[in-house]
Amino acid sequence: MASIPPKNKSPQDPELQDASSQEPVEAPDDGVVTERGLERSREEAKFVPVILKRSDQSRRHPDDILASAIEEGLEQLERPTLSLYLSAVAAGLILGFTAMAVAVMAVVTDGDSAALVQRLAVAFVYPLGFVLCIMSGTELFTEHTATAVYPVMDRKASVLQMLRLWLLVLAGNLTGALASAGLLVSAETVVEARDGYLSIGHHLVEYGAPSLFASSLLAGWLMALGAWLIHASAPGVGQIVSIYIVTFLIGLGGLHHSIAGAVEMLTALLLSDHLTVAQSLRFIGLAAVGNLVGGSLFVAVLNYGHIRHTQEADEA
Image 1 (cartoon, rainbow, N blue to C red):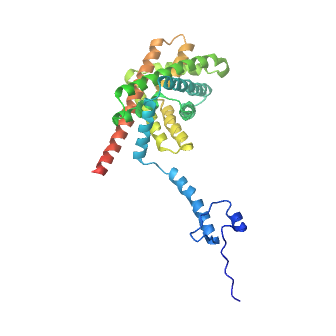
Image 2 (tube, one colour):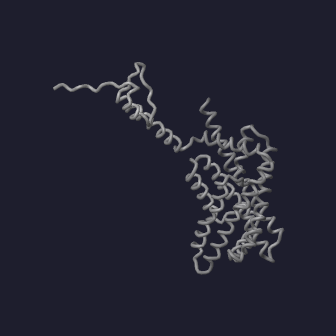
Image 3 (cartoon, rainbow, N blue to C red):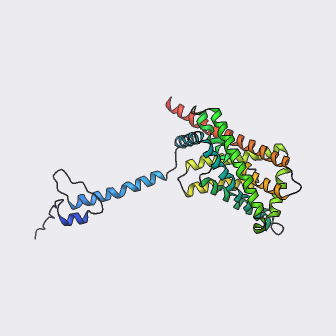
C-alpha cells in the first residue's frame, strides 16, 4: 500500500499555531509552512544564545582589554570630584574588614601555631576586604595607579587629570581608613583583636625605607595587575578569583598595601602609647609611593607599550 505524504499546513491552521506558539516562524513566500521548516526554525532559535554565550566566556584579546582599560580610565578621570571622593572614602572604610580579619587571625594563630600556619591563615583572610571593595565598585588608589595612566599614554587625557584623580582617590581612601580605624577601636571589646593590631602596627614601622619601598612596589604591581585581570575576565566568579589571587599573594608575602596598611597602622596608633604620628605618616607615604611606581611602571607602561607596538607592527 502506498504511503500518504503528509499534507502541508497553512499558517492559519489551529494545530500549527499551537505547535509554533513557543518560537516565531517566518512563512516562505508561498505562505505554506511544513513540519520540517517549523523544526528547523526552532533549532536555529536554540543555537543563537549558545553561540553568544560561548563567545562571551572566551578569553579576551589584549587589544580589547586595553581598550576597556582606557575607557574605564577616561570614565574615572571625567568623574565629578565629590562623586569620586565619596567612592574612595567608601573603599577605605571597606578595607577595614581586611585589617580586622588579619588581626583576628594573628591572635588566634599566635603561640601554638607554626610560622607557616600563621602566614597561610593571614594570607587566606587578607583578600576578603579587597573582594568586597572592588566588587562593590568603590575606587581604590592601587587600582588607578595603572588605569589612570592608559588614557594619558593614549593622548586622550592630560597629566593634570591623572594627578587630580590620584590625589582625590588617595585622600578619600585615607579618610575612610581613618574612620575605619576608629570604628575598629570602638568595637575592640567585641572583636578582641587588640594584640593583633598592635603586633601588626609595630611590624609595619620596623622596616627601613628601601625594604618598605620595594615591598610596596611589588604590592602595587600585583594590585594593578589584578585590575588588568578584571578587565580580561568575564563578570562574576572570574573577577573574584582574580582579585583573590593577587591579594592572597600580597598577604602571603607580607607585602605592603598603602590603604589596607593605613587602616592597620592607624588602628595600632589609636591603641598604642608607643607608636607616633610621624611613624604612621612615614609608612603610609612610602607605601603609597611604592604602590604608585609598581602599578604605573610595571603594569601600565609595559602593557600599553607591548600592545600598541604589536598593533603598529600588524598594520605595517
